[in-house]
Image (cartoon, rainbow, N blue to C red; front, top):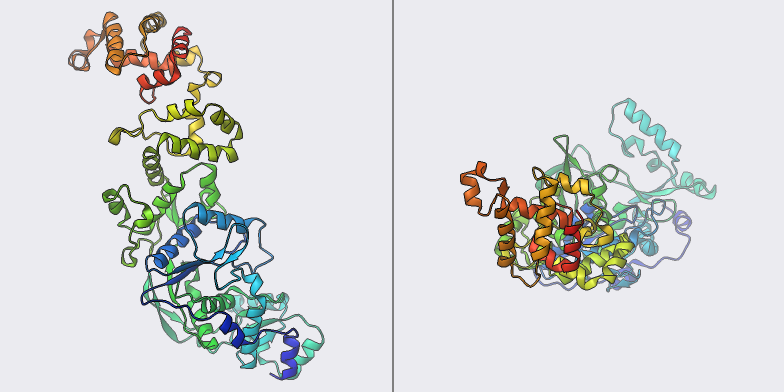
Length: 550
Protein backbone atom coordinates (compact mmCIF):
# COMPACT_ATOMS: atom_id res chain seq x y z
CA UNK A 1 0.00 0.00 0.00
CA UNK A 2 1.35 3.42 -0.93
CA UNK A 3 2.51 5.98 1.66
CA UNK A 4 -0.30 8.26 0.50
CA UNK A 5 -2.92 5.64 1.35
CA UNK A 6 -1.31 4.93 4.72
CA UNK A 7 -1.25 8.64 5.55
CA UNK A 8 -4.93 8.91 4.68
CA UNK A 9 -5.75 5.87 6.80
CA UNK A 10 -3.74 7.21 9.76
CA UNK A 11 -3.76 11.03 9.49
CA UNK A 12 -2.96 11.67 13.14
CA UNK A 13 0.47 11.19 14.77
CA UNK A 14 0.81 7.80 16.45
CA UNK A 15 3.42 6.49 18.88
CA UNK A 16 6.07 4.35 17.24
CA UNK A 17 6.14 0.66 18.05
CA UNK A 18 9.53 0.81 19.76
CA UNK A 19 8.34 3.44 22.25
CA UNK A 20 5.21 1.40 23.03
CA UNK A 21 7.23 -1.75 23.67
CA UNK A 22 9.61 0.25 25.87
CA UNK A 23 6.69 1.64 27.90
CA UNK A 24 5.34 -1.88 28.47
CA UNK A 25 8.41 -4.04 29.03
CA UNK A 26 8.16 -7.82 29.64
CA UNK A 27 7.33 -8.75 33.20
CA UNK A 28 10.05 -10.10 35.42
CA UNK A 29 8.61 -13.46 36.46
CA UNK A 30 10.05 -16.37 38.36
CA UNK A 31 9.65 -19.88 36.89
CA UNK A 32 6.08 -21.07 37.28
CA UNK A 33 4.57 -17.66 38.01
CA UNK A 34 1.45 -16.93 35.99
CA UNK A 35 -0.18 -13.68 34.89
CA UNK A 36 -3.94 -13.81 34.37
CA UNK A 37 -6.60 -11.23 33.90
CA UNK A 38 -10.32 -10.70 34.12
CA UNK A 39 -11.51 -8.53 31.25
CA UNK A 40 -15.24 -7.82 31.45
CA UNK A 41 -17.16 -5.50 29.15
CA UNK A 42 -19.37 -2.85 30.80
CA UNK A 43 -22.25 -3.59 28.44
CA UNK A 44 -24.75 -4.76 31.04
CA UNK A 45 -24.96 -6.31 34.47
CA UNK A 46 -22.18 -8.41 36.02
CA UNK A 47 -23.00 -12.05 35.30
CA UNK A 48 -22.48 -14.58 38.10
CA UNK A 49 -20.44 -16.48 35.51
CA UNK A 50 -18.08 -13.50 35.34
CA UNK A 51 -17.39 -13.82 39.06
CA UNK A 52 -16.98 -17.56 38.61
CA UNK A 53 -14.36 -17.10 35.85
CA UNK A 54 -12.63 -14.24 37.69
CA UNK A 55 -12.26 -16.42 40.79
CA UNK A 56 -10.57 -19.12 38.73
CA UNK A 57 -8.22 -16.61 37.08
CA UNK A 58 -7.33 -15.02 40.42
CA UNK A 59 -6.54 -18.39 42.00
CA UNK A 60 -4.41 -19.54 39.05
CA UNK A 61 -2.30 -16.37 39.29
CA UNK A 62 -2.01 -15.94 43.04
CA UNK A 63 -1.40 -19.60 43.84
CA UNK A 64 1.59 -19.42 41.51
CA UNK A 65 2.87 -16.24 43.17
CA UNK A 66 2.02 -14.35 39.99
CA UNK A 67 -0.13 -11.39 38.98
CA UNK A 68 -3.89 -11.07 38.50
CA UNK A 69 -5.17 -7.87 36.92
CA UNK A 70 -8.42 -6.23 35.85
CA UNK A 71 -8.86 -4.83 32.36
CA UNK A 72 -12.02 -3.04 31.26
CA UNK A 73 -12.85 -3.93 27.67
CA UNK A 74 -15.12 -1.05 26.68
CA UNK A 75 -14.42 -0.71 22.97
CA UNK A 76 -18.09 -1.41 22.18
CA UNK A 77 -19.16 2.10 23.09
CA UNK A 78 -22.65 1.71 21.61
CA UNK A 79 -23.53 -1.03 24.10
CA UNK A 80 -21.78 0.49 27.10
CA UNK A 81 -24.10 0.83 30.10
CA UNK A 82 -23.72 3.70 32.54
CA UNK A 83 -22.58 2.46 35.94
CA UNK A 84 -21.70 -1.05 34.71
CA UNK A 85 -17.98 -0.49 35.27
CA UNK A 86 -18.58 0.40 38.91
CA UNK A 87 -20.68 -2.75 39.38
CA UNK A 88 -17.83 -4.84 37.92
CA UNK A 89 -15.23 -3.35 40.25
CA UNK A 90 -17.51 -3.48 43.30
CA UNK A 91 -18.47 -7.09 42.54
CA UNK A 92 -14.88 -8.29 42.48
CA UNK A 93 -14.03 -6.43 45.68
CA UNK A 94 -17.17 -7.61 47.46
CA UNK A 95 -16.21 -11.25 46.93
CA UNK A 96 -12.54 -10.89 47.83
CA UNK A 97 -11.28 -11.25 44.25
CA UNK A 98 -8.54 -8.64 44.50
CA UNK A 99 -6.67 -7.50 41.41
CA UNK A 100 -3.00 -6.53 41.76
CA UNK A 101 -3.40 -4.04 38.92
CA UNK A 102 -6.29 -2.43 37.12
CA UNK A 103 -8.96 0.15 37.85
CA UNK A 104 -10.09 1.04 41.36
CA UNK A 105 -13.54 1.97 42.64
CA UNK A 106 -12.86 5.63 41.85
CA UNK A 107 -12.12 4.80 38.23
CA UNK A 108 -8.39 5.38 38.64
CA UNK A 109 -5.68 3.13 37.25
CA UNK A 110 -3.10 1.46 39.44
CA UNK A 111 -0.23 -0.68 38.23
CA UNK A 112 2.66 -0.33 35.76
CA UNK A 113 0.80 -1.28 32.55
CA UNK A 114 -1.91 1.36 32.60
CA UNK A 115 -4.25 2.49 31.29
CA UNK A 116 -6.26 -0.65 31.94
CA UNK A 117 -9.35 0.64 30.14
CA UNK A 118 -9.28 -0.16 26.43
CA UNK A 119 -11.01 2.98 25.20
CA UNK A 120 -8.05 4.92 26.63
CA UNK A 121 -5.56 2.89 24.55
CA UNK A 122 -6.88 3.89 21.11
CA UNK A 123 -3.59 5.19 19.75
CA UNK A 124 -1.78 2.00 20.75
CA UNK A 125 -4.17 -0.17 18.73
CA UNK A 126 -3.98 2.15 15.75
CA UNK A 127 -0.19 2.10 15.83
CA UNK A 128 -0.17 -1.70 15.54
CA UNK A 129 -2.91 -1.59 12.90
CA UNK A 130 -0.72 0.78 10.88
CA UNK A 131 2.16 -1.68 11.21
CA UNK A 132 0.01 -4.50 9.82
CA UNK A 133 -1.17 -2.32 6.92
CA UNK A 134 2.43 -1.41 6.11
CA UNK A 135 3.34 -5.11 6.12
CA UNK A 136 0.43 -6.04 3.85
CA UNK A 137 -1.39 -7.91 6.64
CA UNK A 138 -4.37 -5.54 6.90
CA UNK A 139 -6.44 -3.45 4.51
CA UNK A 140 -9.37 -1.01 4.45
CA UNK A 141 -12.82 -2.41 3.76
CA UNK A 142 -15.49 -0.11 2.37
CA UNK A 143 -18.39 -2.56 2.45
CA UNK A 144 -21.56 -1.06 3.89
CA UNK A 145 -23.84 -2.92 6.25
CA UNK A 146 -26.18 -3.40 3.29
CA UNK A 147 -23.34 -5.00 1.32
CA UNK A 148 -22.60 -7.37 4.18
CA UNK A 149 -26.28 -8.28 4.60
CA UNK A 150 -26.58 -9.14 0.89
CA UNK A 151 -23.44 -11.26 1.10
CA UNK A 152 -24.77 -13.13 4.14
CA UNK A 153 -28.08 -13.85 2.42
CA UNK A 154 -26.24 -15.28 -0.59
CA UNK A 155 -24.17 -17.51 1.70
CA UNK A 156 -27.28 -18.66 3.57
CA UNK A 157 -29.11 -19.40 0.33
CA UNK A 158 -26.21 -21.54 -0.85
CA UNK A 159 -25.81 -23.19 2.58
CA UNK A 160 -22.29 -21.79 2.86
CA UNK A 161 -20.34 -20.88 5.96
CA UNK A 162 -21.09 -17.21 6.76
CA UNK A 163 -18.31 -14.67 6.99
CA UNK A 164 -15.94 -12.34 5.18
CA UNK A 165 -13.49 -14.73 3.51
CA UNK A 166 -12.25 -15.99 0.13
CA UNK A 167 -14.23 -14.61 -2.77
CA UNK A 168 -16.61 -12.91 -0.33
CA UNK A 169 -13.79 -10.70 0.98
CA UNK A 170 -14.26 -8.38 -1.95
CA UNK A 171 -12.36 -5.35 -0.58
CA UNK A 172 -9.29 -7.54 -0.20
CA UNK A 173 -9.00 -7.41 -3.98
CA UNK A 174 -9.13 -3.62 -4.31
CA UNK A 175 -6.22 -1.98 -6.10
CA UNK A 176 -4.33 0.93 -4.57
CA UNK A 177 -6.06 3.25 -7.02
CA UNK A 178 -9.50 2.00 -5.96
CA UNK A 179 -8.59 2.33 -2.29
CA UNK A 180 -7.28 5.83 -2.85
CA UNK A 181 -10.40 6.89 -4.75
CA UNK A 182 -12.66 5.59 -1.97
CA UNK A 183 -10.64 7.38 0.71
CA UNK A 184 -10.62 10.66 -1.19
CA UNK A 185 -14.36 10.35 -1.70
CA UNK A 186 -14.75 10.09 2.10
CA UNK A 187 -16.27 6.62 1.96
CA UNK A 188 -16.57 5.04 5.44
CA UNK A 189 -14.31 2.09 6.10
CA UNK A 190 -13.01 -0.37 8.65
CA UNK A 191 -9.62 -2.04 8.78
CA UNK A 192 -9.62 -5.81 8.24
CA UNK A 193 -7.04 -8.47 8.92
CA UNK A 194 -5.70 -10.22 5.82
CA UNK A 195 -5.83 -13.83 6.91
CA UNK A 196 -3.47 -16.39 5.40
CA UNK A 197 -5.33 -19.31 6.98
CA UNK A 198 -6.90 -22.25 5.19
CA UNK A 199 -10.19 -23.43 6.65
CA UNK A 200 -9.63 -26.88 5.16
CA UNK A 201 -6.50 -27.33 7.26
CA UNK A 202 -6.67 -28.15 10.94
CA UNK A 203 -4.57 -27.16 13.90
CA UNK A 204 -4.26 -28.62 17.39
CA UNK A 205 -5.22 -26.28 20.21
CA UNK A 206 -3.75 -27.23 23.58
CA UNK A 207 -6.47 -26.05 25.93
CA UNK A 208 -5.58 -25.87 29.62
CA UNK A 209 -8.96 -27.20 30.68
CA UNK A 210 -10.26 -29.22 27.75
CA UNK A 211 -7.02 -30.79 26.52
CA UNK A 212 -6.01 -31.07 22.87
CA UNK A 213 -8.66 -29.88 20.43
CA UNK A 214 -8.50 -30.12 16.63
CA UNK A 215 -9.85 -26.97 14.97
CA UNK A 216 -9.82 -25.51 11.44
CA UNK A 217 -7.45 -22.64 10.72
CA UNK A 218 -8.95 -19.19 10.59
CA UNK A 219 -9.55 -17.76 7.14
CA UNK A 220 -11.85 -14.87 8.10
CA UNK A 221 -10.70 -11.35 7.37
CA UNK A 222 -12.04 -10.02 10.65
CA UNK A 223 -12.39 -6.35 11.48
CA UNK A 224 -9.42 -5.02 13.43
CA UNK A 225 -10.37 -1.34 13.72
CA UNK A 226 -13.98 -0.17 13.51
CA UNK A 227 -15.23 3.00 11.89
CA UNK A 228 -14.97 4.89 15.17
CA UNK A 229 -11.25 4.15 15.35
CA UNK A 230 -11.60 1.69 18.24
CA UNK A 231 -10.57 -1.96 17.89
CA UNK A 232 -12.65 -5.09 17.85
CA UNK A 233 -12.16 -7.45 20.77
CA UNK A 234 -9.91 -9.88 18.89
CA UNK A 235 -7.32 -7.27 17.97
CA UNK A 236 -7.38 -5.41 21.29
CA UNK A 237 -7.07 -8.63 23.27
CA UNK A 238 -3.94 -9.70 21.37
CA UNK A 239 -2.21 -6.35 21.80
CA UNK A 240 -3.13 -5.90 25.45
CA UNK A 241 -2.32 -9.45 26.49
CA UNK A 242 1.09 -9.07 24.87
CA UNK A 243 1.88 -5.64 26.31
CA UNK A 244 0.52 -6.51 29.76
CA UNK A 245 2.42 -9.78 29.88
CA UNK A 246 -0.55 -12.16 30.20
CA UNK A 247 0.70 -15.74 30.34
CA UNK A 248 -2.63 -17.58 30.78
CA UNK A 249 -5.99 -16.56 29.33
CA UNK A 250 -8.87 -18.36 31.07
CA UNK A 251 -12.32 -17.49 29.80
CA UNK A 252 -15.71 -18.87 28.83
CA UNK A 253 -15.85 -21.49 26.14
CA UNK A 254 -17.89 -19.21 23.88
CA UNK A 255 -14.44 -17.88 22.91
CA UNK A 256 -13.03 -21.30 22.03
CA UNK A 257 -13.85 -20.95 18.35
CA UNK A 258 -11.81 -17.72 18.24
CA UNK A 259 -8.55 -19.33 19.36
CA UNK A 260 -7.25 -20.03 15.81
CA UNK A 261 -7.80 -16.36 14.95
CA UNK A 262 -6.19 -15.16 18.15
CA UNK A 263 -3.12 -17.34 17.66
CA UNK A 264 -2.96 -16.12 14.05
CA UNK A 265 -2.99 -12.51 15.22
CA UNK A 266 -0.15 -13.15 17.69
CA UNK A 267 1.90 -14.74 14.91
CA UNK A 268 1.18 -11.83 12.53
CA UNK A 269 2.30 -9.36 15.18
CA UNK A 270 5.45 -11.37 15.88
CA UNK A 271 4.56 -12.37 19.44
CA UNK A 272 4.19 -15.53 21.49
CA UNK A 273 0.58 -16.31 22.29
CA UNK A 274 -0.49 -16.95 25.90
CA UNK A 275 -1.82 -20.32 26.98
CA UNK A 276 -5.59 -20.62 26.69
CA UNK A 277 -8.11 -22.39 28.89
CA UNK A 278 -11.87 -22.38 28.31
CA UNK A 279 -14.45 -23.20 30.95
CA UNK A 280 -18.04 -24.14 30.21
CA UNK A 281 -20.71 -21.64 31.32
CA UNK A 282 -22.76 -22.11 34.45
CA UNK A 283 -25.89 -24.09 33.72
CA UNK A 284 -29.26 -24.76 35.31
CA UNK A 285 -31.97 -27.38 35.05
CA UNK A 286 -35.02 -26.30 33.07
CA UNK A 287 -37.80 -28.92 32.90
CA UNK A 288 -35.20 -31.61 33.45
CA UNK A 289 -32.86 -30.32 30.76
CA UNK A 290 -29.56 -28.53 31.27
CA UNK A 291 -29.11 -25.13 29.68
CA UNK A 292 -26.85 -22.12 30.01
CA UNK A 293 -27.68 -19.69 32.81
CA UNK A 294 -29.28 -16.90 30.80
CA UNK A 295 -29.00 -13.14 31.22
CA UNK A 296 -32.44 -12.78 29.70
CA UNK A 297 -34.38 -15.47 31.52
CA UNK A 298 -32.67 -16.12 34.86
CA UNK A 299 -32.59 -13.37 37.51
CA UNK A 300 -29.84 -15.24 39.38
CA UNK A 301 -27.53 -14.67 36.40
CA UNK A 302 -27.17 -11.08 37.61
CA UNK A 303 -24.75 -10.80 40.54
CA UNK A 304 -26.95 -8.04 41.99
CA UNK A 305 -29.64 -10.70 42.56
CA UNK A 306 -27.53 -12.09 45.39
CA UNK A 307 -26.98 -8.62 46.86
CA UNK A 308 -30.69 -7.83 46.82
CA UNK A 309 -31.60 -11.10 48.53
CA UNK A 310 -28.81 -10.75 51.06
CA UNK A 311 -26.74 -13.85 50.46
CA UNK A 312 -23.57 -13.55 52.56
CA UNK A 313 -20.55 -12.94 50.32
CA UNK A 314 -18.63 -15.73 52.01
CA UNK A 315 -21.43 -18.19 51.24
CA UNK A 316 -21.51 -17.38 47.55
CA UNK A 317 -17.74 -17.51 47.16
CA UNK A 318 -17.58 -20.87 48.93
CA UNK A 319 -20.31 -22.13 46.65
CA UNK A 320 -18.37 -21.00 43.57
CA UNK A 321 -15.27 -22.77 44.85
CA UNK A 322 -17.47 -25.84 45.20
CA UNK A 323 -18.55 -25.50 41.57
CA UNK A 324 -15.00 -24.92 40.34
CA UNK A 325 -13.28 -27.81 41.99
CA UNK A 326 -14.64 -31.23 42.91
CA UNK A 327 -12.34 -31.59 45.91
CA UNK A 328 -13.24 -28.30 47.59
CA UNK A 329 -16.08 -29.76 49.67
CA UNK A 330 -13.87 -32.47 51.17
CA UNK A 331 -11.14 -29.92 51.84
CA UNK A 332 -13.58 -27.58 53.58
CA UNK A 333 -14.92 -30.43 55.69
CA UNK A 334 -11.37 -31.17 56.84
CA UNK A 335 -10.51 -27.47 57.25
CA UNK A 336 -13.77 -25.88 58.48
CA UNK A 337 -12.11 -22.80 59.95
CA UNK A 338 -9.89 -21.97 56.99
CA UNK A 339 -10.71 -19.28 54.46
CA UNK A 340 -11.87 -20.58 51.09
CA UNK A 341 -8.98 -18.74 49.44
CA UNK A 342 -6.58 -21.05 51.28
CA UNK A 343 -7.87 -23.93 49.16
CA UNK A 344 -5.18 -25.24 46.76
CA UNK A 345 -6.85 -25.07 43.35
CA UNK A 346 -5.78 -27.81 40.95
CA UNK A 347 -6.33 -27.73 37.17
CA UNK A 348 -6.57 -31.51 37.02
CA UNK A 349 -9.57 -31.51 39.39
CA UNK A 350 -11.53 -28.67 37.88
CA UNK A 351 -15.16 -29.68 37.62
CA UNK A 352 -16.26 -27.17 35.00
CA UNK A 353 -15.23 -28.77 31.71
CA UNK A 354 -18.76 -30.06 31.09
CA UNK A 355 -20.53 -27.07 32.66
CA UNK A 356 -21.22 -26.69 36.36
CA UNK A 357 -24.87 -26.88 37.40
CA UNK A 358 -26.05 -23.97 39.53
CA UNK A 359 -27.99 -25.44 42.43
CA UNK A 360 -29.84 -23.16 44.85
CA UNK A 361 -30.38 -26.00 47.30
CA UNK A 362 -26.62 -26.43 47.65
CA UNK A 363 -26.02 -22.68 47.86
CA UNK A 364 -28.66 -22.35 50.57
CA UNK A 365 -27.14 -25.22 52.54
CA UNK A 366 -23.70 -23.58 52.41
CA UNK A 367 -25.20 -20.21 53.32
CA UNK A 368 -26.89 -21.63 56.42
CA UNK A 369 -23.57 -23.11 57.55
CA UNK A 370 -21.77 -19.82 57.00
CA UNK A 371 -24.37 -17.79 58.93
CA UNK A 372 -24.43 -20.34 61.75
CA UNK A 373 -20.72 -19.80 62.37
CA UNK A 374 -21.00 -16.02 62.51
CA UNK A 375 -21.30 -14.18 65.81
CA UNK A 376 -24.54 -12.36 66.58
CA UNK A 377 -22.68 -9.05 66.29
CA UNK A 378 -21.33 -9.95 62.85
CA UNK A 379 -24.75 -11.03 61.63
CA UNK A 380 -26.22 -7.79 62.94
CA UNK A 381 -23.61 -5.71 61.11
CA UNK A 382 -24.07 -7.62 57.86
CA UNK A 383 -27.87 -7.37 57.98
CA UNK A 384 -27.73 -3.66 58.82
CA UNK A 385 -25.43 -3.00 55.86
CA UNK A 386 -27.80 -4.89 53.59
CA UNK A 387 -30.92 -3.23 55.00
CA UNK A 388 -29.51 0.27 54.58
CA UNK A 389 -29.66 -0.30 50.83
CA UNK A 390 -32.65 -2.60 50.38
CA UNK A 391 -34.92 -2.09 53.42
CA UNK A 392 -34.16 1.29 55.02
CA UNK A 393 -37.13 1.09 57.41
CA UNK A 394 -35.83 -2.18 58.78
CA UNK A 395 -32.38 -0.61 59.05
CA UNK A 396 -33.89 2.10 61.27
CA UNK A 397 -35.45 -0.58 63.45
CA UNK A 398 -32.11 -2.35 63.77
CA UNK A 399 -30.28 0.81 64.76
CA UNK A 400 -32.96 1.73 67.31
CA UNK A 401 -32.92 -1.75 68.89
CA UNK A 402 -29.31 -2.80 68.49
CA UNK A 403 -28.81 -4.70 71.76
CA UNK A 404 -32.25 -6.30 71.63
CA UNK A 405 -31.72 -7.58 68.07
CA UNK A 406 -28.24 -8.88 68.88
CA UNK A 407 -29.71 -10.81 71.82
CA UNK A 408 -32.34 -12.24 69.45
CA UNK A 409 -29.64 -13.29 66.99
CA UNK A 410 -27.63 -14.83 69.79
CA UNK A 411 -30.33 -17.41 70.55
CA UNK A 412 -28.90 -20.91 69.91
CA UNK A 413 -25.76 -19.44 68.34
CA UNK A 414 -22.21 -20.75 68.78
CA UNK A 415 -23.23 -23.94 70.57
CA UNK A 416 -21.36 -26.35 68.30
CA UNK A 417 -23.21 -28.79 66.06
CA UNK A 418 -26.57 -27.76 67.54
CA UNK A 419 -26.20 -24.11 66.54
CA UNK A 420 -29.32 -22.88 64.79
CA UNK A 421 -29.20 -23.02 61.00
CA UNK A 422 -32.50 -21.45 60.04
CA UNK A 423 -31.18 -18.17 58.63
CA UNK A 424 -29.64 -18.35 55.16
CA UNK A 425 -29.92 -14.83 53.73
CA UNK A 426 -30.46 -11.36 55.15
CA UNK A 427 -33.79 -10.68 53.45
CA UNK A 428 -35.34 -13.45 55.59
CA UNK A 429 -34.53 -11.80 58.90
CA UNK A 430 -37.26 -9.10 59.00
CA UNK A 431 -39.93 -11.80 58.90
CA UNK A 432 -37.95 -14.25 61.05
CA UNK A 433 -37.77 -11.85 64.00
CA UNK A 434 -40.94 -9.83 63.47
CA UNK A 435 -42.74 -11.50 66.40
CA UNK A 436 -40.20 -10.03 68.82
CA UNK A 437 -41.71 -6.58 68.16
CA UNK A 438 -45.16 -5.77 69.44
CA UNK A 439 -46.08 -3.54 66.51
CA UNK A 440 -45.25 -6.37 64.08
CA UNK A 441 -46.90 -9.14 66.11
CA UNK A 442 -50.20 -9.39 64.24
CA UNK A 443 -51.18 -13.04 64.62
CA UNK A 444 -54.93 -13.20 65.23
CA UNK A 445 -56.71 -15.36 67.79
CA UNK A 446 -58.10 -17.52 65.00
CA UNK A 447 -54.64 -18.03 63.51
CA UNK A 448 -53.26 -19.03 66.90
CA UNK A 449 -56.06 -21.54 67.41
CA UNK A 450 -55.29 -23.11 64.02
CA UNK A 451 -51.72 -23.71 65.17
CA UNK A 452 -52.93 -25.46 68.34
CA UNK A 453 -55.08 -28.32 67.06
CA UNK A 454 -56.97 -30.73 69.31
CA UNK A 455 -56.87 -28.49 72.39
CA UNK A 456 -59.97 -26.54 73.41
CA UNK A 457 -59.95 -22.79 73.75
CA UNK A 458 -60.77 -23.08 77.45
CA UNK A 459 -57.82 -25.39 78.04
CA UNK A 460 -55.53 -23.13 76.02
CA UNK A 461 -56.59 -20.23 78.20
CA UNK A 462 -56.10 -22.25 81.40
CA UNK A 463 -52.59 -23.41 80.40
CA UNK A 464 -51.54 -19.87 79.48
CA UNK A 465 -52.89 -18.39 82.72
CA UNK A 466 -51.27 -21.05 84.92
CA UNK A 467 -47.89 -20.65 83.23
CA UNK A 468 -48.15 -16.86 83.35
CA UNK A 469 -48.61 -16.99 87.14
CA UNK A 470 -45.54 -19.15 87.77
CA UNK A 471 -43.22 -17.84 85.04
CA UNK A 472 -39.97 -16.58 86.54
CA UNK A 473 -37.22 -15.35 84.16
CA UNK A 474 -34.65 -16.21 86.84
CA UNK A 475 -35.43 -19.94 86.50
CA UNK A 476 -32.85 -22.02 84.70
CA UNK A 477 -34.01 -24.07 81.73
CA UNK A 478 -34.62 -27.24 83.73
CA UNK A 479 -36.81 -25.44 86.27
CA UNK A 480 -38.65 -23.65 83.45
CA UNK A 481 -39.38 -26.93 81.67
CA UNK A 482 -40.43 -28.66 84.90
CA UNK A 483 -43.13 -26.01 85.32
CA UNK A 484 -44.44 -26.90 81.85
CA UNK A 485 -44.36 -30.61 82.71
CA UNK A 486 -46.32 -30.01 85.92
CA UNK A 487 -48.98 -28.08 84.05
CA UNK A 488 -49.11 -30.76 81.37
CA UNK A 489 -49.53 -33.59 83.84
CA UNK A 490 -52.17 -31.72 85.83
CA UNK A 491 -54.36 -31.55 82.73
CA UNK A 492 -53.92 -35.12 81.51
CA UNK A 493 -50.93 -34.73 79.23
CA UNK A 494 -47.92 -37.04 79.46
CA UNK A 495 -44.99 -35.35 81.17
CA UNK A 496 -42.54 -37.89 79.70
CA UNK A 497 -42.36 -38.73 76.01
CA UNK A 498 -41.53 -42.38 76.77
CA UNK A 499 -44.79 -42.80 78.64
CA UNK A 500 -46.73 -41.18 75.84
CA UNK A 501 -45.15 -43.37 73.18
CA UNK A 502 -45.90 -46.52 75.16
CA UNK A 503 -49.57 -45.66 75.73
CA UNK A 504 -50.69 -42.59 73.77
CA UNK A 505 -54.38 -43.31 74.24
CA UNK A 506 -54.02 -42.78 77.97
CA UNK A 507 -53.24 -39.08 77.55
CA UNK A 508 -54.68 -35.97 75.92
CA UNK A 509 -51.27 -35.41 74.40
CA UNK A 510 -47.75 -34.89 75.63
CA UNK A 511 -45.67 -32.16 77.19
CA UNK A 512 -44.57 -30.88 73.75
CA UNK A 513 -48.22 -30.12 72.95
CA UNK A 514 -48.42 -27.93 76.06
CA UNK A 515 -45.13 -26.26 75.18
CA UNK A 516 -46.58 -25.60 71.72
CA UNK A 517 -49.50 -23.75 73.32
CA UNK A 518 -47.05 -21.39 74.99
CA UNK A 519 -44.93 -21.08 71.83
CA UNK A 520 -47.89 -20.11 69.66
CA UNK A 521 -49.28 -17.62 72.15
CA UNK A 522 -45.90 -15.94 72.63
CA UNK A 523 -44.63 -15.99 69.02
CA UNK A 524 -47.62 -16.67 66.77
CA UNK A 525 -45.71 -19.64 65.30
CA UNK A 526 -45.47 -23.34 65.95
CA UNK A 527 -41.81 -23.60 64.94
CA UNK A 528 -39.19 -21.32 66.45
CA UNK A 529 -35.75 -21.43 68.01
CA UNK A 530 -35.42 -22.27 71.71
CA UNK A 531 -38.57 -21.04 73.46
CA UNK A 532 -36.88 -20.69 76.85
CA UNK A 533 -34.36 -18.22 75.35
CA UNK A 534 -37.05 -16.43 73.36
CA UNK A 535 -38.95 -15.70 76.57
CA UNK A 536 -35.82 -14.48 78.35
CA UNK A 537 -34.94 -12.15 75.45
CA UNK A 538 -38.52 -10.84 75.14
CA UNK A 539 -38.75 -10.00 78.81
CA UNK A 540 -41.34 -10.91 81.45
CA UNK A 541 -43.80 -8.14 80.72
CA UNK A 542 -44.08 -8.94 77.00
CA UNK A 543 -44.30 -12.70 77.62
CA UNK A 544 -47.07 -12.42 80.21
CA UNK A 545 -49.05 -9.94 78.16
CA UNK A 546 -49.07 -12.29 75.17
CA UNK A 547 -50.01 -15.26 77.32
CA UNK A 548 -52.94 -13.35 78.73
CA UNK A 549 -54.12 -11.95 75.36
CA UNK A 550 -55.71 -15.18 74.09
